Length: 111
Image (cartoon, rainbow, N blue to C red; front, side, top):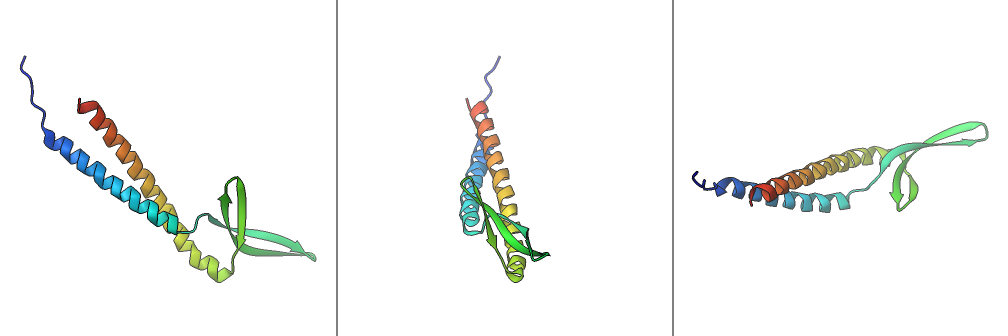
């Protein structure tokens, strides 16, 4: 039986990818923190036999759900920003999963 020599280029490539993902995670976290959190919804208020519907931004502050009333123009303007935040959060989750997978591979095979 002969001892096989490990090819370190693959491990170096994985380490480089892990470092790249770590930088992406850090940048995504910074960008997400700048964007508003929550989701758009509508509140209905009954007053004098009429129902008024107006847009609001729903988000959590600890255990409490907060509703912030918005004008129709502001609600339309915030829609793409909330969609961007949601996409960035899914990218963040994917990158964290990628880092965990690479760490598992490096931890198991580098011994």
